[in-house]
Length: 204
Ligand code: ZN
Image (cartoon, rainbow, N blue to C red; front, side):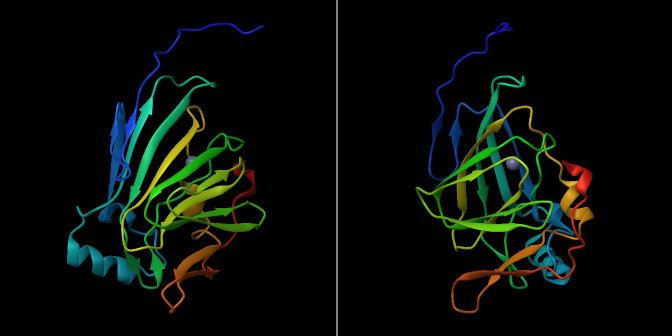
């Protein structure tokens, strides 16, 4: 039998394709200086910091939370600025959910990009997203957004409020196993990251 805790309030959220969310309860920004160590080409990233400043905005999350119990959802937008660091496209830090079985939906509102997905035992998928496309990220998949276009890559996301994020997993592994890079012909491709040492198997 279901036991009832405090009943959260419903909400009407107005979300524009540029990532703005009316009705949000919070969010955060990531700046160029926060991304040190994320890109394989550290010199290219350092050059960008020198050129644009450590405070240059690269990534914004706006989100709505109505509770943090096991049945609650976090609904939000992710807006990732375009860019290149060496041949790698601009991306988020990426994570595995701290409760690793928790899934997530990403629905592209504008721009173009890739959801890069990896399992701890070495499987990789790159799901290409344009406006109207959605990616279902099942539990147990490490995931990050990559902007492969010239405009902001904006997605609407939704995931369980108790999922949490393990960000250290990727850093501890020398980065994700695959890099999303310029293919030299105006598109993107993936290639193995030679610095990747494998994920901690105890993460999940
Ligand atoms: Zn996630």
